[in-house]
Length: 142
Image 1: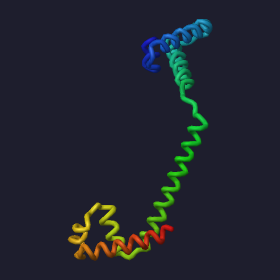
Image 2: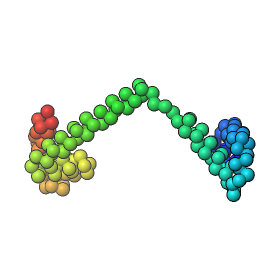
Image 3: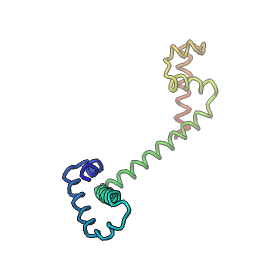
């Protein structure tokens, strides 16, 4: 019984207390225990249930301040998600070339020179298009 309690509770002293408490409870119900078909299984089940009760009691309670902080974090996450959705909508209104350049630069991580090689545009042309694209996105995000 002690080994089982230690496996469940991961604390020798607490496991010893759990075994002692379970044996005390079983002793008070010794007449019922004699009528069971499997007294050993009944005893182990009683110990397991007692260990589970102890583990449930050890669960940390939620501090109201911590809960308020986590709710504030959720609000910030929702705001970030909202901004992301607005950005996706704004990008969807761009021309196909502007969308392609945004995709190559920010989604695939290419440099301006690599984008120039892929698209056939000059680096200065790409910089001009990207500058105008940024201005449009900024305007649409406000």
